Image 1: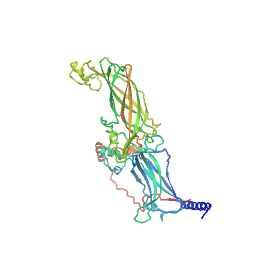
Image 2: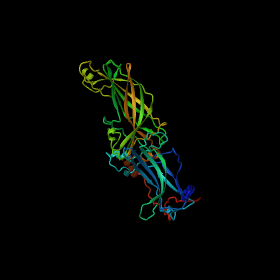
Image 3: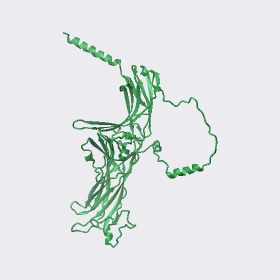
Length: 493
C-alpha cells in the first residue's frame, strides 16, 4: 500500500508532465494590424481599411488555405422562459483574394519565420440583394434592408443599445487545413479585430403617420379653463410636422440641429376670449431598438407595435435622454372667421380673403343643447422649435431597418400654455430621422445620371465638333505583366 507522500509525489509528476506537454506545442500567434487604426476610429462609406496579418508560428504548421474577410453581422437574443433564442445574420462578407502564387511552397508555416499578408477593404455603399432573402411586405422595406446598418453596442458612449441587439464589423483571418482529400477543412488558426462603421445615410421622405401608428402622436387637442372650477374658455389643437433629419458627421462626434414646425389652433368659447400664451417647450428623445429572432417583413415602428411584437419572438427596448430646446420666437396669433360666421354675414364664399393666412376657414363647432352660441372666430399661430441632440453625451447612430434589428427615434415635445390663471400641457410624439453626412467619395458615387436634355445637348455638341483626321499611334508592349498581388514578405526572426 503506497503512502500518502508517494501518492502526492506521483500526482505532482503527472501534472508536471502534462504541463510540459502543453508547453511543447504552443499555439502560433496571429495578429491583425490596420494602418492608422485606433480604438475610437470610425469608418464610413468609401473608407479604406488596409493593413496586414502577421503570423509568427512557434512550430511548423501545415496548412492549405489562408482567408482574410471583412464580416458584418447582426445578432439578437430573446430571453425566453424555456430556451433563450440567439440569432445571427451575416449581411456582409468581403473576401480578400489571395492568389495561388502568393502561398509558400510547400504550404508550411515554418518555425522562426514571420509571415505578413497584406489586405485592403473598402466600406461599400450598399449590400447585395442576397443580404435580405426573406419575405418582406414591399420594395421599400427591401430597399431599407440592403442598406449598411451602423455599428450598434460597441461605442465608447452609451448608444441606447440593449444586450439583446448587436451589429458588429470584424476583420477576420483564418488558416484552414484539409487532412483528408474531399473532406471539410479544419480551422487551425483564427483571429479577429473589430472596427466601428457609420455608413453614410441620406435623408428619407417623411413618414405617412396615421391614427393606427401608436408610436407617434402628430396632433393633440386640449380643453382650456381659466381655473379648475370655471367653465371652459376654449379648445387648443397643436399639430406637428416631421422635422428635417438631424445629420451626424462621418465620425459621429457632432450632429446638426433641426427645427420642428408646430401649428396651433384655438377655438374660443366666446368671441371675447383671448388665445392662450405659450410660455415654454420642453423636449426629450427616445431611441427605440427593435429586435427579432426571425426576419422582420415590415416597418416595426408603424402600426400597433405592441401587438406585432408581443408573442412571436420579437421585442423592443427604449432609452430616453433630455434634449435642449433653442430660443423660441414670438408667437403671434392670427384671427380668422369660421365658415358659419361668413355665411351669417351674407358672404357665401368660403375662400379666405387676402388678409387671412393660408389656412382655410374652419367650420364652426356644432351646438349641443342649450347654451351660448359657438364663437364665430378661430385663432391660429405657428411656432418653430429648434432642437439640438446631445451628441457629446450620447452616441447616436443613424435610423436604420435591417432584417432582424432596427433603430428609430421619437422626439417628445411638451408645449406649456397659460390661459387666465391656469396652465395646460400638450405633449406630441414626433418621428425624428438621424442620418450621416456623406464624404466626397460617397457623394461622387451616388451622383444621379445626366438628364435626357443634357444627353441630347452633349450629343449635338459632339456631332458639330470639328475633327482632324490622322493615323492613330499604336504602341506594342511586349512581355508586359499584369500587376500582381503583393507576395509574402518573409523575414527571419
